[in-house]
Length: 168
Image (cartoon, rainbow, N blue to C red):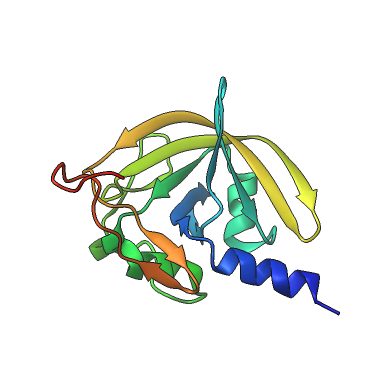
């Protein structure tokens, strides 16, 4: 008999996904975590969805914050993504390129796209929480190839930003 949970994990491990950082500031303390579950959800209102596997630590801070940032990462940001995925790794250091928006959220200005958001709604599903987040602002940075994750590693894709690379 097959193990449905293991088969499901294996299926999504093989499915490539974009990598993003979610950051928030609560009581003046910055929090952040890496996700690979970001998806567009709605145009009216402009909204995205993502999931959190726990409701404590950085995830709890995002859930309690009045607003937060979603940073879509570029290929050169794999070390930063790893740092925000591992407990105790360096986060929000000056050399990583962090600043704060006037609204208080930690902002990674090197991200190709950042979005300021607030929770629209959420629902518990098993041990996870599915978040629908309304986008309040989109901040664009330098156009670079976005960071992709598959099978516990990062992918290097040919840049589609270069007009000399034909789309098929």
